[in-house]
Amino acid sequence: MIRWGVSCMNHDASICVMSDSTVLFASHTERYSGIKNDPALNWSIINDCLKFGQPDEIHYYENPILKTARRLYAGQGFKFDNLKKELKKFGVNAKVYWGTHHKSHAAAGFFTSPFNEAAIVTIDAIGEFDTTSIWHGHKDGGIFKKLSSEKYPKSLGLFYSAMTDRVGLKANEDEYILMGMSGYGDPFRFYYDVHRIYHSSHNFHRGCKDFLPDLKEEDYFDLAAATQYVYEIALERLLEKTRRTTKQKNLVLMGGCALNCLANRLASKYFDNTWIMPNPGDAGSSLGAILAHTKKQAEWEGPYLGHEIKGEYPTDELFNELKNTGIAGVANGKAEFGPRALGNRSLLADPRGSQMKDVVNKIKKRQEFRPFAPVILQEDVSEYFDVGKNFESPYMQYIVRCKQPEDFPAIVHIDGTSRVQTVTKDQHRGLYELLTLWKKHTGCPMLLNTSLNIKGKPIVNNKTDAKQFEDKYGVKVF
Ligand SMILES: [Fe+2]
Image (cartoon, rainbow, N blue to C red; front, top):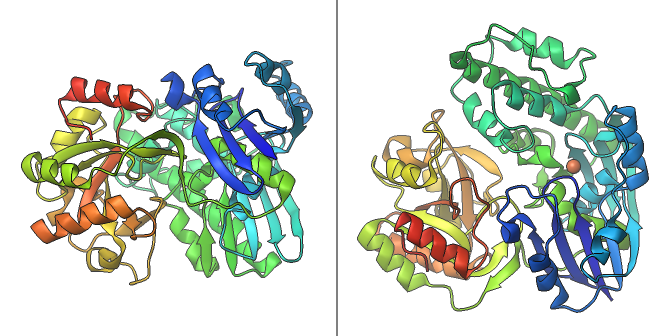
């Protein structure tokens, strides 16, 4: 039985292909079209999916009738997302099942998690009507049900997106930049204003452009800090309620808001164990749409599920280039499913000293206040970061304190923290071996790891994209 899960027609379209419970493929359409956050399907991704044959069933990530109703309620006019019609353009014709938006999020998390039983919390901006929901899952007991939800227009995700828009950034895309800005601001300066509007009846779906109208650009960092603070308080309340009402020790956190890696640390205050699927936003719901239907554990080896560039992992080539120039790109193996490059479509660099941040920033052309993330051997993480020996963050989902921030300015935020990726041999053999070689040579078990993409474009997908990157920036890609 070949099943396709599809998330499209809104933003961040993606397709997942499963054979029974095995995930064969999952990727974002943007990687094929070159259009960031592309909502549409395209021939190139469809052709990669068709390599596994025509699908027997297709699962859409939400309910188009409920979605249409919510759009009408929100005054957005009539629009019906007809996946069957959309797929016909590509000669794909199979029965289409509909899920619901939050169910797909919850299933993507729970049925990839290592837990037999867990509480599941889903937080996002907007889908159908639910904007936050609490679920209980028990695999052996055959339980997967929603316990409660908060509904549109109240929405923690819309609040965060509206504030992103308020500081001149792009809503639904640049929320991570607002999060990064928050480290530079004073959370208390605008706290009461932000708290008041969040708890008012204001509909953040319409933005909040007129909020604090006298705000100057230099105030944006304080607004970002207050936004993050109000978000974290609301998240804590939700987590506390979830723990109290479900009495579960395990948490699955999903939805676009689970990408807020600064706030994700709060989960450990209320739960013993937390799982965040590496692609918790709407793109990950292509996988979730299938899992919500089958209600069975997914068999997968992690997020390396996209377009494949065949060949051995170029460990030696990368090591030599890093040794000689301090910077090298890698485009090898299957592309990551999710927003982070985790070693298969990465730009790697020497994280030591003060030079490298500027070198990589010149290529990435990012705002200077944003540092890059480190990838480190798991066994060394507690030596460099303020975490326990068993701490793991294989998908760059947590922010932790660096013990020697002055030695690694390229990968440390102004507040002394880093969004760290840890690697074990089982998780990524090639990357693990590269870091081991690098450590032997330099004494440092860590590299800077940022996504391999041309400014304004999605992450590199195939060999042609990789060559374009190499030509444009003069950095070798292996
Ligand atoms: Fe969502």
